[in-house]
Amino acid sequence: MKVMKLIKKATALFLTVGMIASLAACGGASSAPAGANDQTADTQETDAQAADAGTTVSAAGSTAAAETAAAIDKIVFGTNAEFPPFEFISSTGGAIGEFDGIDMAIAKQIGDDLGAEVAINNIEFDSLLIALQNGQIDAIIAGMTITEERKESVDFTTPYYNATQVMIAKEGTDITKAADMKGKNIAVIQGYTGETCVKDLGFDYVSFKKGPDAIMDLINGKSDVVVIDSATAQKYVNDNAGQKLVIIEDNEQFANEEYGIAVKKGNTALLNALNAEIEKMVADGTVANLADQYAVAAE
Ligand code: ARG
Image (cartoon, rainbow, N blue to C red; front, side, top):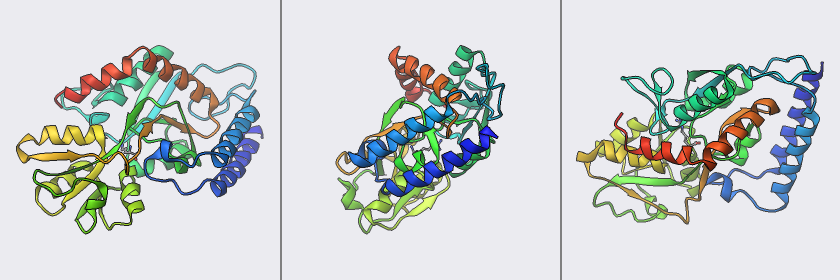
């Protein structure tokens, strides 16, 4: 079957790219090795897309009649709704059912524009990539940083948001840069790029399942510092106003990260549709407006 061939091809490709790409460095996209490695990966992705031409794979990953481009009538987005302001559960109702946040509003808008039904599957962050590969979900929208390592197993849309890792500590901390975390009790969230960043620094750390657990550990004085994405850090600091938490940046150590929506490798029909949507929403200011709106919105 054509699909099987494609899958085999994708697997072979994935191995090749995997061997060529060096370890994902902290900071995702912009700290990726420049030059030959990048070019190799890009060329191979383009080849994979060319190989896909003519095969129509529906959003759900099932084969549609190869001749006609199937309309996308349903998209199951996987997320991990523990990452405000991008995704969180709202007791008063959100953009999609109980799910609210920047990503959820983007997903809703995509559904409206494409005339597709949109469903949210809320799972653990570090199970998202596997769920996508298994076909349990069609796409991941989860404030997910585009990294070389993740690109080995999934395809990403054009970026829609820029972030960076930051440190959260208690007021009065002597931490002024990433290197100052040496010897401190460092908290990260399991599977987040912040974990990779601390690992790359060579420091020991404790990894928590959820952001609020790490923040609680900081508030209780067990952890000295939490490393997490900038907008989420700001949200936690605002939400715990009485706790006198501060954000410390180190833009030299923590490079720019870009968030993208991930689809199963080779699902070009969905990738193209999402890219068109994302490009439009970035260009017309929709994403920036949502970011402003949710940064201040009470949960
Ligand atoms: N940007 C970070 C990463 O890609 C953290 C994302 C966490 N997202 C979430 N929905 N819990 O690793």
